[in-house]
Image (cartoon, rainbow, N blue to C red):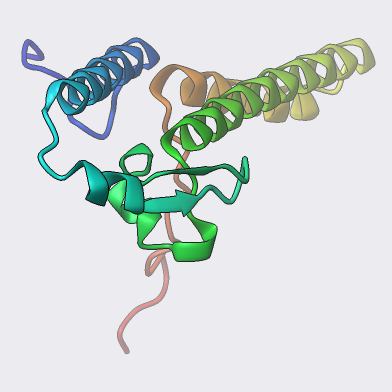
Length: 153
């Protein structure tokens, strides 16, 4: 009945945290492996340098991901990319909390006015925001489809 693992596109926030922790462990393991690997061509390693577009430091190419190195002038080092990702996540969370507070305030205002239509509207918005917070998925507005009364003749 629902004993299997959840679908990949419907991760709860807890599962996302586990996934992020796994990624972090893999990243650290890769960094440790690269540090432990003896370099036969030490001259080549020091010659390969790139400048980070964010922190403006000239760093070894090993401090960049391959896809970042391919961006040439816009390349960012791993540390700057990780800081950017964390900042975006914090911004998203604070924005989400702000939206929740706004909708809760509107529900209280509609309740004091006695306007049930507005209250229902804002309760629906609150439900959608809470579901997005739990699942990490935004609500999808389905298309109108063919609808009723649109016969083929």
